[in-house]
Every structure is written in C-alpha cells, then in structure tokens.
Image (cartoon, rainbow, N blue to C red):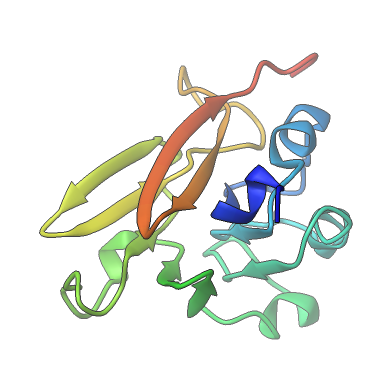
Length: 163
C-alpha cells in the first residue's frame, strides 16, 4: 500500500523503430507497466526485446511486412489502467472522430514528429521516431502516466550514442 507507484500507471510509447531498438530507448521505457509500439517495427526481435520490459501491444505499420507482421493488427484498443487507448500507425487512417467518452487517447506514429495535443477531450500522442534518424527530426519515445484518472504525457528525446 505504501508504494507510490500504485497510484500511477505508466505506458511507454515507441514508434518507427524500423528494426533499430536503441539502448537509450530501452532505458527510457524501463518501469513501464505496458508498452505500446505504434508501428513500423521493422523486425519481430524489436517486440521480443521490448516484452522483456513489460507487456507489449503493437500495431502494424506501412513498412512492416512478412509472416511475423501479418499477425499484428493495423489498429487496436488497449486497456491501460482504467483508460482506453486507441492505437494505429497513421493518424490519417483514423475512421471515426474520437470523443472523450470513448477513448482517453489516440496513439499513432508514422510522421516521425513527436506530438502531445488535446483535442475535444482526447489526448493525441505521437512519440516520434525511436529508430534511424530522419532529416533533423528528434529521436524520441513518450511516457504516458495515468494518475487519479488523468493523463500526463511527456516526450522523451533520447540522445543516441551512435547513428
């Protein structure tokens, strides 16, 4: 009962690894109660390594191909504590407008651009890309904390030891 973490549920969010799971990303996701990979995984070994930290819920990205990827859904609902999160790879493929009464957050990747933005009571999260650096975009993951029924999300820019 005295554990301060009991009041907080932590969701590690990663996307666009494209087969590269950086040690800095692994370190940033430590302590997560669950991990969401928002697609463009690149290799099933990425999911296996993440599952050593916490249970992993992934969606298939437009660059995920092969037998291993076919088993992964293109979109899914994830229960995180008392909140329901909708996950897909490309936000442009979101078919229904979410309302705060259905999903607490929509999580997507694809653009490689980190984003945390509230729209009509729903938190939209893009952790950015944790894989190979693209252009001048940051290499990042996100941490979503659910405390006392509210969502708190921060982007964590990871500094790669090598590119």
